[in-house]
Image 1 (spheres, rainbow, N blue to C red):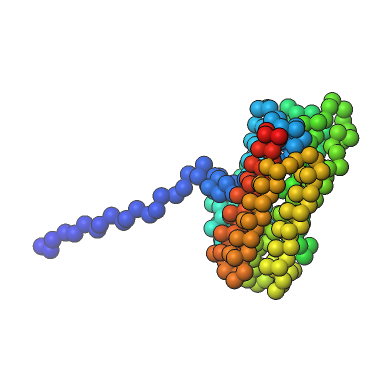
Image 2 (cartoon, one colour):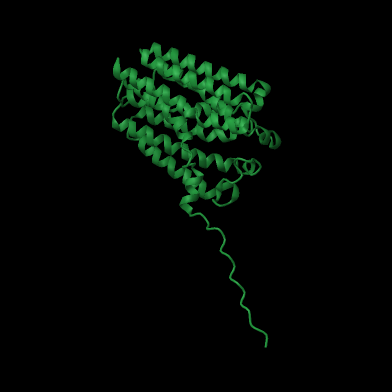
Length: 307
């Protein structure tokens, strides 16, 4: 009688990530550079508006609100771009794109995060609350702008800069439902910061340029063509000149200028990274941009504390 054999059990497949792990991946929890790019100009504006230390309440509101709204924006962006992302090397494995997280789940998560952020804004004042609606509208509009505008990064620049007038409103506004408490200097700082967003998001767009051309998505890297590196450096120069000039007009001095000098040195370093248009080097430049914003923030805080 032949010996009986028992089939070996099949090897277990790779463990599937938990829902929490997928949600954290969706909101880019492992990539804090995104919310830091939002945070530093917002906190710089908050310190300027408060003429120094703004207090723990406003610091907590704007720090947590920045993290929450950036996370909510990732949810909306991934839903809007899910058909495009599957064709882009860098984004093909995002949870919504692969189907690991459904569109409904992503939208519900984004809505929940937005509501928590709105709850934080409700603890400030009416002018800041009014501006929060405009900020939300711009954030939702950005993912769709790349289908229409040649340089959708301009819309992102407004979205990523809206914390500036909101910080001024929260620090200076009263109980009235109007925006007179927000000075023109706050809107000027928003415009100045927009140039910085154009600079770093064009670096980001350079990473995906070949994929974007193939699938028909527009970006500033495509619009600028062979002038992409020159355009980025001009954006950096415009940001540094405008933000620096506004800071001086608002009474900031030598420590602030020292922070701006550190930021300018980083911008020059970025040129050495992006000039060869390597995907890896452009992505490295993009991810390092939060240190540029941090330098400006530290210079602002030091100047207001030590003058």
